[in-house]
Length: 599
Image 1 (cartoon, rainbow, N blue to C red):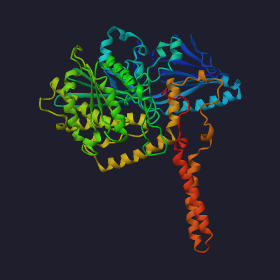
Image 2: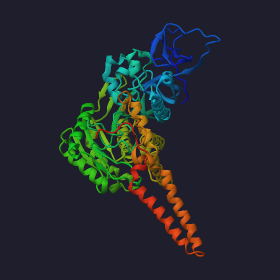
Image 3: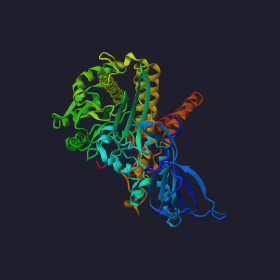
Image 4: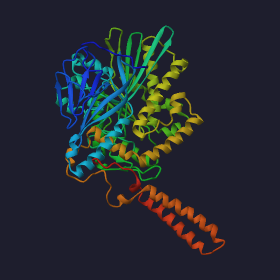
Protein backbone atom coordinates (compact mmCIF):
# COMPACT_ATOMS: atom_id res chain seq x y z
CA UNK A 1 0.00 0.00 0.00
CA UNK A 2 1.35 3.41 -0.86
CA UNK A 3 2.11 5.95 1.82
CA UNK A 4 -0.91 8.14 1.28
CA UNK A 5 -2.38 8.43 4.74
CA UNK A 6 -1.83 11.90 6.17
CA UNK A 7 -3.60 13.68 8.97
CA UNK A 8 -3.13 17.36 9.49
CA UNK A 9 -5.62 17.83 12.34
CA UNK A 10 -4.53 20.24 15.03
CA UNK A 11 -5.21 17.74 17.81
CA UNK A 12 -2.63 15.23 16.60
CA UNK A 13 -0.58 14.09 19.60
CA UNK A 14 2.56 13.07 17.72
CA UNK A 15 4.34 14.92 14.96
CA UNK A 16 4.02 12.75 11.85
CA UNK A 17 6.07 14.87 9.45
CA UNK A 18 8.97 17.23 10.15
CA UNK A 19 11.50 19.21 8.21
CA UNK A 20 15.01 18.41 9.34
CA UNK A 21 17.31 21.44 9.08
CA UNK A 22 20.95 20.34 9.21
CA UNK A 23 23.03 23.34 10.28
CA UNK A 24 26.78 23.15 10.86
CA UNK A 25 26.37 23.10 14.64
CA UNK A 26 22.88 21.70 15.22
CA UNK A 27 19.90 19.78 13.88
CA UNK A 28 16.50 21.47 14.01
CA UNK A 29 13.19 19.62 13.62
CA UNK A 30 10.31 21.72 12.30
CA UNK A 31 6.85 20.07 12.70
CA UNK A 32 4.79 20.61 9.54
CA UNK A 33 1.59 18.73 10.47
CA UNK A 34 0.05 22.08 11.36
CA UNK A 35 0.25 25.26 9.33
CA UNK A 36 2.21 27.13 12.03
CA UNK A 37 4.54 25.53 14.56
CA UNK A 38 5.01 27.37 17.87
CA UNK A 39 8.33 25.69 18.71
CA UNK A 40 11.13 23.70 17.13
CA UNK A 41 13.40 21.00 18.52
CA UNK A 42 17.09 21.90 18.39
CA UNK A 43 19.76 19.26 19.00
CA UNK A 44 23.43 20.13 19.30
CA UNK A 45 25.77 18.33 16.89
CA UNK A 46 28.56 18.69 19.46
CA UNK A 47 27.08 16.76 22.39
CA UNK A 48 23.42 15.90 21.63
CA UNK A 49 21.93 18.40 24.10
CA UNK A 50 18.31 19.29 23.34
CA UNK A 51 16.18 22.42 23.62
CA UNK A 52 12.92 23.80 22.26
CA UNK A 53 13.40 27.11 20.44
CA UNK A 54 10.83 29.69 19.36
CA UNK A 55 12.03 30.38 15.83
CA UNK A 56 14.26 29.05 13.11
CA UNK A 57 17.74 30.56 12.66
CA UNK A 58 18.18 32.94 9.74
CA UNK A 59 19.78 31.35 6.68
CA UNK A 60 22.21 33.16 4.45
CA UNK A 61 25.39 32.74 2.46
CA UNK A 62 27.36 31.82 5.57
CA UNK A 63 24.73 29.40 6.86
CA UNK A 64 22.92 27.36 4.23
CA UNK A 65 21.57 24.16 5.81
CA UNK A 66 20.51 20.96 4.14
CA UNK A 67 16.73 20.50 4.47
CA UNK A 68 14.78 17.27 4.09
CA UNK A 69 11.64 15.49 5.30
CA UNK A 70 11.65 12.99 8.19
CA UNK A 71 8.78 11.05 9.74
CA UNK A 72 9.75 10.55 13.35
CA UNK A 73 12.51 10.53 15.95
CA UNK A 74 13.25 7.02 17.18
CA UNK A 75 15.56 8.15 19.96
CA UNK A 76 19.16 8.81 20.94
CA UNK A 77 22.07 6.74 22.19
CA UNK A 78 25.11 8.14 23.99
CA UNK A 79 28.46 6.45 23.59
CA UNK A 80 31.77 7.40 25.17
CA UNK A 81 32.24 10.89 23.77
CA UNK A 82 29.31 11.43 21.43
CA UNK A 83 25.59 10.96 20.95
CA UNK A 84 23.75 9.45 17.97
CA UNK A 85 20.23 10.39 16.91
CA UNK A 86 17.98 7.87 15.11
CA UNK A 87 15.38 9.28 12.71
CA UNK A 88 12.91 7.74 10.24
CA UNK A 89 13.72 8.97 6.74
CA UNK A 90 11.10 6.95 4.83
CA UNK A 91 8.04 4.92 5.76
CA UNK A 92 5.34 2.78 4.19
CA UNK A 93 1.71 2.64 5.27
CA UNK A 94 1.06 -1.11 5.39
CA UNK A 95 -2.49 -1.18 6.76
CA UNK A 96 -4.51 -0.34 9.82
CA UNK A 97 -4.83 -1.49 13.41
CA UNK A 98 -8.37 -1.08 14.73
CA UNK A 99 -8.95 1.66 12.18
CA UNK A 100 -5.68 3.53 12.72
CA UNK A 101 -2.87 3.66 10.12
CA UNK A 102 0.19 1.46 10.71
CA UNK A 103 3.53 2.36 9.20
CA UNK A 104 6.62 0.28 8.59
CA UNK A 105 10.07 1.88 8.80
CA UNK A 106 11.48 1.71 5.28
CA UNK A 107 14.75 3.45 6.09
CA UNK A 108 16.19 4.96 9.23
CA UNK A 109 19.30 7.07 9.52
CA UNK A 110 21.73 7.79 12.33
CA UNK A 111 22.70 11.43 12.78
CA UNK A 112 25.98 11.81 14.69
CA UNK A 113 26.20 14.41 17.46
CA UNK A 114 29.83 13.71 18.22
CA UNK A 115 31.90 16.76 17.41
CA UNK A 116 33.33 16.60 20.93
CA UNK A 117 35.13 13.39 19.92
CA UNK A 118 37.77 15.58 18.28
CA UNK A 119 39.01 16.68 21.71
CA UNK A 120 39.00 13.15 23.13
CA UNK A 121 42.03 10.94 23.73
CA UNK A 122 43.29 8.57 21.06
CA UNK A 123 41.98 5.57 23.00
CA UNK A 124 38.54 7.15 23.38
CA UNK A 125 38.43 7.97 19.67
CA UNK A 126 39.29 4.36 18.85
CA UNK A 127 36.60 2.96 21.15
CA UNK A 128 34.04 5.49 19.91
CA UNK A 129 34.68 4.38 16.35
CA UNK A 130 34.27 0.71 17.27
CA UNK A 131 31.01 1.26 19.11
CA UNK A 132 29.57 3.62 16.51
CA UNK A 133 30.24 0.95 13.87
CA UNK A 134 27.94 -1.37 15.84
CA UNK A 135 25.26 1.31 15.94
CA UNK A 136 25.17 1.62 12.19
CA UNK A 137 24.17 -2.04 12.02
CA UNK A 138 20.83 -0.80 13.38
CA UNK A 139 20.08 0.82 10.03
CA UNK A 140 19.45 -2.71 8.71
CA UNK A 141 17.05 -3.69 11.51
CA UNK A 142 14.17 -5.71 10.08
CA UNK A 143 10.49 -5.29 10.90
CA UNK A 144 10.05 -1.98 12.73
CA UNK A 145 6.46 -0.68 12.93
CA UNK A 146 4.77 2.37 14.45
CA UNK A 147 1.59 4.39 14.51
CA UNK A 148 1.01 8.03 15.37
CA UNK A 149 -2.51 7.35 16.67
CA UNK A 150 -2.66 3.98 18.45
CA UNK A 151 -0.29 2.00 20.62
CA UNK A 152 0.85 -1.05 18.66
CA UNK A 153 2.45 -2.60 21.76
CA UNK A 154 -1.00 -3.25 23.25
CA UNK A 155 -3.49 -5.87 22.07
CA UNK A 156 -7.13 -4.98 21.38
CA UNK A 157 -8.29 -6.29 24.74
CA UNK A 158 -5.71 -4.20 26.64
CA UNK A 159 -6.60 -1.10 24.63
CA UNK A 160 -10.29 -1.59 25.44
CA UNK A 161 -9.45 -1.94 29.13
CA UNK A 162 -7.48 1.34 29.13
CA UNK A 163 -10.63 3.43 28.86
CA UNK A 164 -9.85 7.00 29.94
CA UNK A 165 -6.15 6.27 30.20
CA UNK A 166 -6.01 6.09 26.42
CA UNK A 167 -5.66 9.89 26.45
CA UNK A 168 -2.16 9.51 27.83
CA UNK A 169 0.78 9.97 25.44
CA UNK A 170 1.43 6.78 23.50
CA UNK A 171 4.81 6.16 25.11
CA UNK A 172 3.20 6.19 28.57
CA UNK A 173 0.63 3.59 27.48
CA UNK A 174 3.21 1.29 25.92
CA UNK A 175 3.93 -2.20 27.18
CA UNK A 176 7.68 -1.92 27.94
CA UNK A 177 8.21 -5.53 26.87
CA UNK A 178 7.46 -4.65 23.27
CA UNK A 179 8.82 -1.10 23.09
CA UNK A 180 11.81 -1.59 20.79
CA UNK A 181 13.14 1.95 21.27
CA UNK A 182 12.36 2.24 24.98
CA UNK A 183 16.00 2.76 25.98
CA UNK A 184 16.66 5.21 23.14
CA UNK A 185 13.64 7.34 24.11
CA UNK A 186 15.00 8.10 27.58
CA UNK A 187 16.94 11.17 26.44
CA UNK A 188 13.77 12.67 24.92
CA UNK A 189 11.66 11.72 27.94
CA UNK A 190 14.12 13.55 30.22
CA UNK A 191 13.55 16.67 28.12
CA UNK A 192 9.72 16.44 28.21
CA UNK A 193 9.36 16.12 24.45
CA UNK A 194 6.06 14.21 24.32
CA UNK A 195 5.07 15.24 20.75
CA UNK A 196 8.34 13.72 19.48
CA UNK A 197 8.19 10.48 21.52
CA UNK A 198 7.28 7.88 18.90
CA UNK A 199 6.89 4.28 20.22
CA UNK A 200 8.37 1.73 17.80
CA UNK A 201 7.71 -2.01 17.88
CA UNK A 202 9.69 -4.80 16.24
CA UNK A 203 7.75 -7.71 14.82
CA UNK A 204 5.45 -8.32 11.89
CA UNK A 205 2.22 -7.04 10.41
CA UNK A 206 0.23 -9.01 7.83
CA UNK A 207 -3.27 -8.38 6.53
CA UNK A 208 -5.83 -9.50 3.99
CA UNK A 209 -9.39 -8.75 2.97
CA UNK A 210 -11.70 -11.20 1.24
CA UNK A 211 -15.34 -11.22 0.21
CA UNK A 212 -17.71 -13.96 1.29
CA UNK A 213 -21.21 -13.44 -0.08
CA UNK A 214 -22.11 -9.89 0.88
CA UNK A 215 -19.59 -9.84 3.73
CA UNK A 216 -16.08 -8.40 3.74
CA UNK A 217 -13.71 -10.32 6.01
CA UNK A 218 -10.76 -8.26 7.27
CA UNK A 219 -8.02 -10.26 9.03
CA UNK A 220 -4.78 -8.87 10.48
CA UNK A 221 -1.86 -10.59 12.17
CA UNK A 222 0.47 -8.62 14.45
CA UNK A 223 3.60 -10.01 16.09
CA UNK A 224 5.28 -8.14 18.96
CA UNK A 225 8.85 -9.15 19.87
CA UNK A 226 9.90 -8.80 23.49
CA UNK A 227 13.06 -6.76 24.16
CA UNK A 228 13.91 -8.30 27.55
CA UNK A 229 16.09 -11.11 26.21
CA UNK A 230 16.34 -10.18 22.58
CA UNK A 231 19.06 -11.17 20.17
CA UNK A 232 20.24 -13.75 17.70
CA UNK A 233 19.37 -17.43 17.50
CA UNK A 234 22.44 -19.04 19.08
CA UNK A 235 23.53 -16.21 21.37
CA UNK A 236 20.18 -15.81 23.11
CA UNK A 237 18.73 -19.13 24.22
CA UNK A 238 16.55 -20.15 27.14
CA UNK A 239 15.80 -17.77 30.00
CA UNK A 240 17.63 -15.41 32.32
CA UNK A 241 17.40 -15.51 36.10
CA UNK A 242 14.35 -13.21 36.08
CA UNK A 243 12.44 -15.65 33.87
CA UNK A 244 12.53 -13.62 30.64
CA UNK A 245 13.00 -15.93 27.67
CA UNK A 246 14.63 -15.59 24.27
CA UNK A 247 12.51 -15.02 21.16
CA UNK A 248 9.39 -14.25 23.16
CA UNK A 249 6.72 -13.07 20.72
CA UNK A 250 3.09 -12.13 21.30
CA UNK A 251 0.99 -12.76 18.19
CA UNK A 252 -2.47 -11.21 17.82
CA UNK A 253 -4.91 -12.32 15.14
CA UNK A 254 -7.69 -9.79 14.57
CA UNK A 255 -10.92 -10.33 12.63
CA UNK A 256 -13.19 -7.44 11.64
CA UNK A 257 -16.43 -8.33 9.88
CA UNK A 258 -20.16 -7.49 10.11
CA UNK A 259 -19.28 -4.69 12.53
CA UNK A 260 -17.72 -7.14 15.00
CA UNK A 261 -14.08 -7.14 16.12
CA UNK A 262 -12.48 -10.34 17.42
CA UNK A 263 -8.94 -10.67 18.77
CA UNK A 264 -7.06 -13.86 19.64
CA UNK A 265 -3.63 -13.94 21.30
CA UNK A 266 -0.91 -16.59 21.26
CA UNK A 267 2.65 -16.40 22.58
CA UNK A 268 5.87 -18.23 21.83
CA UNK A 269 9.17 -18.28 23.69
CA UNK A 270 12.27 -20.34 24.37
CA UNK A 271 12.22 -23.15 26.96
CA UNK A 272 12.24 -21.23 30.28
CA UNK A 273 15.32 -22.83 31.80
CA UNK A 274 18.92 -21.64 32.03
CA UNK A 275 20.42 -23.28 28.97
CA UNK A 276 22.61 -22.42 26.02
CA UNK A 277 23.87 -23.81 22.73
CA UNK A 278 27.20 -22.12 22.06
CA UNK A 279 28.38 -22.33 18.46
CA UNK A 280 31.61 -24.27 17.92
CA UNK A 281 31.58 -24.86 14.13
CA UNK A 282 29.65 -28.13 14.48
CA UNK A 283 26.38 -28.23 12.54
CA UNK A 284 24.32 -28.72 15.70
CA UNK A 285 26.12 -27.63 18.88
CA UNK A 286 25.29 -29.52 22.05
CA UNK A 287 22.74 -28.22 24.53
CA UNK A 288 24.14 -27.19 27.90
CA UNK A 289 21.97 -26.70 30.97
CA UNK A 290 23.43 -24.01 33.22
CA UNK A 291 22.75 -23.90 36.96
CA UNK A 292 20.23 -26.76 36.81
CA UNK A 293 19.14 -26.18 40.42
CA UNK A 294 17.83 -22.74 39.42
CA UNK A 295 15.70 -24.17 36.60
CA UNK A 296 12.43 -24.71 38.51
CA UNK A 297 12.60 -21.24 40.08
CA UNK A 298 13.27 -19.59 36.73
CA UNK A 299 10.39 -21.48 35.11
CA UNK A 300 8.09 -20.48 37.98
CA UNK A 301 8.99 -16.79 37.59
CA UNK A 302 8.31 -17.02 33.86
CA UNK A 303 4.90 -18.64 34.20
CA UNK A 304 3.83 -16.44 37.11
CA UNK A 305 4.51 -13.45 34.87
CA UNK A 306 2.44 -15.02 32.07
CA UNK A 307 -0.44 -15.73 34.47
CA UNK A 308 -0.32 -12.11 35.65
CA UNK A 309 -0.62 -10.87 32.09
CA UNK A 310 -2.80 -13.50 30.40
CA UNK A 311 -4.51 -15.40 33.26
CA UNK A 312 -4.52 -19.12 32.33
CA UNK A 313 -1.63 -20.64 30.35
CA UNK A 314 -1.23 -23.90 28.50
CA UNK A 315 2.42 -24.64 27.60
CA UNK A 316 2.73 -26.67 24.39
CA UNK A 317 6.21 -28.17 24.08
CA UNK A 318 7.01 -29.40 20.55
CA UNK A 319 10.60 -30.62 20.99
CA UNK A 320 11.85 -34.17 20.51
CA UNK A 321 11.68 -36.72 23.33
CA UNK A 322 15.10 -38.16 22.48
CA UNK A 323 18.66 -36.89 22.03
CA UNK A 324 19.83 -33.49 23.18
CA UNK A 325 16.37 -32.01 22.78
CA UNK A 326 14.98 -34.86 24.84
CA UNK A 327 17.25 -34.14 27.80
CA UNK A 328 16.26 -30.49 27.71
CA UNK A 329 12.59 -31.42 27.37
CA UNK A 330 12.82 -33.77 30.34
CA UNK A 331 14.16 -30.93 32.50
CA UNK A 332 11.32 -28.71 31.30
CA UNK A 333 8.73 -31.36 32.16
CA UNK A 334 10.24 -31.82 35.63
CA UNK A 335 10.08 -28.08 36.28
CA UNK A 336 6.46 -27.96 35.10
CA UNK A 337 5.48 -30.72 37.52
CA UNK A 338 6.07 -28.29 40.39
CA UNK A 339 4.19 -25.46 38.65
CA UNK A 340 1.18 -27.07 36.94
CA UNK A 341 -2.19 -26.37 38.54
CA UNK A 342 -5.71 -25.36 37.56
CA UNK A 343 -4.49 -22.36 35.55
CA UNK A 344 -1.14 -23.66 34.23
CA UNK A 345 -1.12 -26.78 32.04
CA UNK A 346 1.73 -28.55 30.27
CA UNK A 347 1.41 -30.57 27.07
CA UNK A 348 4.28 -32.33 25.31
CA UNK A 349 3.71 -33.03 21.62
CA UNK A 350 6.75 -34.57 19.91
CA UNK A 351 6.29 -32.80 16.58
CA UNK A 352 8.93 -34.68 14.61
CA UNK A 353 7.96 -38.12 15.93
CA UNK A 354 4.24 -37.62 15.23
CA UNK A 355 4.27 -35.41 12.13
CA UNK A 356 7.64 -36.32 10.63
CA UNK A 357 8.67 -33.99 7.83
CA UNK A 358 5.53 -34.16 5.69
CA UNK A 359 2.47 -35.24 7.73
CA UNK A 360 1.72 -31.95 9.43
CA UNK A 361 -2.01 -32.63 9.19
CA UNK A 362 -1.45 -34.83 12.28
CA UNK A 363 -1.40 -31.60 14.30
CA UNK A 364 -5.12 -32.26 14.60
CA UNK A 365 -4.11 -34.67 17.39
CA UNK A 366 -2.64 -31.75 19.31
CA UNK A 367 -5.73 -29.63 18.71
CA UNK A 368 -7.91 -32.38 20.14
CA UNK A 369 -5.77 -32.28 23.28
CA UNK A 370 -6.01 -28.52 23.81
CA UNK A 371 -9.47 -27.85 22.35
CA UNK A 372 -11.11 -27.71 25.78
CA UNK A 373 -8.65 -25.00 26.89
CA UNK A 374 -9.29 -22.91 23.78
CA UNK A 375 -13.07 -23.13 24.14
CA UNK A 376 -12.97 -22.34 27.85
CA UNK A 377 -10.66 -19.30 27.53
CA UNK A 378 -12.11 -18.11 24.20
CA UNK A 379 -11.10 -14.81 22.53
CA UNK A 380 -11.85 -11.11 22.88
CA UNK A 381 -15.00 -9.97 21.03
CA UNK A 382 -16.61 -6.55 20.54
CA UNK A 383 -20.09 -6.18 19.04
CA UNK A 384 -21.29 -3.61 16.50
CA UNK A 385 -21.62 -1.00 19.29
CA UNK A 386 -18.03 -1.65 20.46
CA UNK A 387 -19.37 -3.26 23.61
CA UNK A 388 -17.44 -6.21 25.03
CA UNK A 389 -19.21 -9.50 24.40
CA UNK A 390 -16.48 -11.74 25.84
CA UNK A 391 -12.80 -11.65 26.69
CA UNK A 392 -9.84 -13.97 26.31
CA UNK A 393 -8.90 -15.44 29.67
CA UNK A 394 -6.00 -17.69 28.74
CA UNK A 395 -3.18 -18.06 26.26
CA UNK A 396 -1.42 -20.91 24.46
CA UNK A 397 2.35 -20.71 24.91
CA UNK A 398 4.11 -22.69 22.19
CA UNK A 399 7.79 -23.59 21.98
CA UNK A 400 10.17 -25.75 20.00
CA UNK A 401 13.93 -25.23 20.19
CA UNK A 402 14.14 -22.04 18.14
CA UNK A 403 10.41 -21.20 18.51
CA UNK A 404 10.35 -20.56 14.77
CA UNK A 405 9.53 -23.39 12.40
CA UNK A 406 7.55 -26.05 14.28
CA UNK A 407 6.06 -23.29 16.40
CA UNK A 408 4.80 -21.30 13.42
CA UNK A 409 3.18 -24.36 11.82
CA UNK A 410 1.41 -25.10 15.11
CA UNK A 411 0.31 -21.53 15.80
CA UNK A 412 -1.10 -21.17 12.28
CA UNK A 413 -3.18 -24.32 12.82
CA UNK A 414 -4.56 -22.93 16.10
CA UNK A 415 -5.17 -19.53 14.52
CA UNK A 416 -7.16 -21.14 11.71
CA UNK A 417 -9.36 -23.04 14.15
CA UNK A 418 -10.07 -19.88 16.15
CA UNK A 419 -10.88 -17.88 13.00
CA UNK A 420 -13.44 -20.52 12.04
CA UNK A 421 -14.96 -20.30 15.51
CA UNK A 422 -15.19 -16.49 15.31
CA UNK A 423 -16.79 -16.54 11.86
CA UNK A 424 -19.39 -18.98 13.13
CA UNK A 425 -20.17 -16.89 16.19
CA UNK A 426 -20.79 -13.69 14.21
CA UNK A 427 -22.96 -15.51 11.68
CA UNK A 428 -20.78 -15.60 8.56
CA UNK A 429 -19.93 -19.32 8.72
CA UNK A 430 -22.42 -22.09 9.26
CA UNK A 431 -21.91 -24.73 11.95
CA UNK A 432 -20.22 -27.14 9.53
CA UNK A 433 -18.18 -24.61 7.54
CA UNK A 434 -14.38 -24.64 7.48
CA UNK A 435 -11.71 -22.35 6.01
CA UNK A 436 -10.60 -25.07 3.61
CA UNK A 437 -14.01 -24.89 1.86
CA UNK A 438 -13.34 -21.29 0.77
CA UNK A 439 -10.21 -21.36 -1.37
CA UNK A 440 -9.64 -17.59 -1.58
CA UNK A 441 -9.89 -17.05 2.18
CA UNK A 442 -7.89 -20.21 2.92
CA UNK A 443 -5.09 -19.18 0.53
CA UNK A 444 -4.90 -15.65 1.93
CA UNK A 445 -4.88 -16.95 5.50
CA UNK A 446 -2.03 -19.40 4.84
CA UNK A 447 0.02 -16.77 3.02
CA UNK A 448 -0.49 -14.35 5.90
CA UNK A 449 0.81 -16.83 8.47
CA UNK A 450 3.72 -17.90 6.24
CA UNK A 451 4.86 -14.29 5.82
CA UNK A 452 4.44 -13.76 9.55
CA UNK A 453 6.67 -16.76 10.28
CA UNK A 454 9.29 -15.54 7.80
CA UNK A 455 9.45 -12.12 9.47
CA UNK A 456 10.01 -13.52 12.96
CA UNK A 457 12.53 -16.04 11.67
CA UNK A 458 14.56 -13.40 9.81
CA UNK A 459 14.77 -11.29 12.97
CA UNK A 460 15.99 -14.19 15.13
CA UNK A 461 17.88 -16.51 12.77
CA UNK A 462 18.64 -14.39 9.72
CA UNK A 463 16.66 -16.55 7.24
CA UNK A 464 13.06 -17.26 6.34
CA UNK A 465 11.23 -19.92 8.35
CA UNK A 466 11.66 -23.61 7.60
CA UNK A 467 8.55 -25.67 6.79
CA UNK A 468 7.05 -22.48 5.33
CA UNK A 469 5.72 -24.35 2.31
CA UNK A 470 3.25 -26.25 4.49
CA UNK A 471 2.03 -23.05 6.15
CA UNK A 472 1.76 -21.33 2.76
CA UNK A 473 0.28 -24.17 0.66
CA UNK A 474 -0.99 -26.73 3.17
CA UNK A 475 1.50 -29.39 2.00
CA UNK A 476 5.21 -30.08 1.75
CA UNK A 477 6.83 -29.52 -1.64
CA UNK A 478 10.17 -30.51 -3.18
CA UNK A 479 10.95 -26.84 -3.70
CA UNK A 480 10.17 -26.13 -0.04
CA UNK A 481 12.41 -28.97 1.17
CA UNK A 482 15.29 -27.73 -1.00
CA UNK A 483 14.77 -24.17 0.25
CA UNK A 484 14.82 -25.44 3.83
CA UNK A 485 18.18 -27.08 3.16
CA UNK A 486 19.62 -23.85 1.79
CA UNK A 487 18.24 -21.81 4.69
CA UNK A 488 19.73 -24.29 7.17
CA UNK A 489 23.18 -23.78 5.63
CA UNK A 490 22.74 -20.00 5.68
CA UNK A 491 21.74 -20.19 9.35
CA UNK A 492 24.89 -22.22 10.05
CA UNK A 493 27.07 -19.56 8.44
CA UNK A 494 25.34 -16.65 10.20
CA UNK A 495 25.37 -18.39 13.59
CA UNK A 496 29.09 -19.11 13.40
CA UNK A 497 30.52 -16.15 11.52
CA UNK A 498 28.19 -13.13 11.66
CA UNK A 499 25.76 -13.12 14.59
CA UNK A 500 28.24 -12.04 17.28
CA UNK A 501 28.44 -8.53 15.86
CA UNK A 502 24.67 -8.44 15.37
CA UNK A 503 24.18 -9.46 19.01
CA UNK A 504 26.52 -6.71 20.20
CA UNK A 505 24.59 -4.13 18.17
CA UNK A 506 21.30 -5.37 19.65
CA UNK A 507 22.61 -5.20 23.22
CA UNK A 508 23.87 -1.66 22.64
CA UNK A 509 20.52 -0.50 21.20
CA UNK A 510 18.43 -2.10 23.94
CA UNK A 511 20.56 -0.79 26.80
CA UNK A 512 21.67 -4.24 27.92
CA UNK A 513 25.24 -2.91 27.69
CA UNK A 514 25.67 0.65 28.97
CA UNK A 515 28.89 2.38 28.05
CA UNK A 516 29.16 4.65 31.06
CA UNK A 517 30.19 1.62 33.15
CA UNK A 518 33.07 0.86 30.79
CA UNK A 519 34.89 4.17 30.54
CA UNK A 520 38.59 3.87 31.04
CA UNK A 521 38.60 0.14 30.34
CA UNK A 522 40.18 -1.63 27.41
CA UNK A 523 37.89 -2.04 24.43
CA UNK A 524 35.75 -5.16 24.95
CA UNK A 525 35.34 -5.55 21.22
CA UNK A 526 38.87 -6.86 20.79
CA UNK A 527 39.70 -10.58 21.25
CA UNK A 528 42.39 -11.49 23.74
CA UNK A 529 44.78 -14.39 24.25
CA UNK A 530 44.76 -17.14 21.65
CA UNK A 531 41.51 -15.81 20.20
CA UNK A 532 43.43 -12.81 18.89
CA UNK A 533 45.34 -15.15 16.56
CA UNK A 534 42.45 -17.47 15.65
CA UNK A 535 41.43 -16.80 12.06
CA UNK A 536 38.99 -19.08 10.28
CA UNK A 537 40.19 -17.83 6.91
CA UNK A 538 43.83 -18.59 7.69
CA UNK A 539 43.06 -21.99 9.22
CA UNK A 540 40.79 -23.00 6.33
CA UNK A 541 43.40 -21.78 3.89
CA UNK A 542 45.99 -24.00 5.53
CA UNK A 543 43.70 -27.03 5.25
CA UNK A 544 42.99 -26.40 1.57
CA UNK A 545 46.60 -25.54 0.77
CA UNK A 546 47.78 -28.71 2.50
CA UNK A 547 45.38 -30.84 0.46
CA UNK A 548 46.28 -29.10 -2.80
CA UNK A 549 50.05 -29.40 -2.34
CA UNK A 550 49.69 -33.00 -1.19
CA UNK A 551 47.88 -33.83 -4.43
CA UNK A 552 50.63 -32.12 -6.46
CA UNK A 553 53.32 -34.02 -4.55
CA UNK A 554 51.60 -37.36 -5.16
CA UNK A 555 51.68 -36.68 -8.88
CA UNK A 556 55.42 -35.95 -8.74
CA UNK A 557 56.14 -39.02 -6.60
CA UNK A 558 56.10 -41.29 -9.65
CA UNK A 559 59.20 -39.44 -10.91
CA UNK A 560 60.89 -38.80 -7.56
CA UNK A 561 60.15 -40.85 -4.43
CA UNK A 562 61.22 -37.96 -2.22
CA UNK A 563 57.92 -36.28 -3.04
CA UNK A 564 56.19 -38.90 -0.90
CA UNK A 565 57.75 -37.18 2.10
CA UNK A 566 56.42 -33.85 0.86
CA UNK A 567 52.98 -35.45 0.48
CA UNK A 568 53.08 -36.66 4.08
CA UNK A 569 54.20 -33.23 5.23
CA UNK A 570 51.39 -31.39 3.45
CA UNK A 571 48.78 -33.93 4.58
CA UNK A 572 50.03 -33.60 8.15
CA UNK A 573 49.74 -29.84 7.92
CA UNK A 574 46.21 -30.11 6.58
CA UNK A 575 45.12 -32.67 9.18
CA UNK A 576 46.76 -30.65 11.95
CA UNK A 577 44.99 -27.45 10.95
CA UNK A 578 41.66 -29.31 10.70
CA UNK A 579 42.24 -30.84 14.15
CA UNK A 580 42.91 -27.42 15.67
CA UNK A 581 39.71 -26.06 14.10
CA UNK A 582 37.71 -28.98 15.48
CA UNK A 583 39.28 -28.89 18.95
CA UNK A 584 39.05 -25.10 19.36
CA UNK A 585 35.99 -24.42 17.24
CA UNK A 586 34.61 -21.75 19.56
CA UNK A 587 37.74 -19.64 19.12
CA UNK A 588 37.09 -19.36 15.39
CA UNK A 589 33.48 -18.18 15.67
CA UNK A 590 32.17 -14.63 15.63
CA UNK A 591 31.01 -14.18 19.22
CA UNK A 592 29.49 -11.18 21.03
CA UNK A 593 31.98 -9.28 23.20
CA UNK A 594 29.86 -6.71 25.02
CA UNK A 595 27.12 -8.17 27.17
CA UNK A 596 27.33 -11.69 28.57
CA UNK A 597 24.25 -13.34 30.00
CA UNK A 598 24.31 -13.40 33.80
CA UNK A 599 24.05 -17.16 33.94
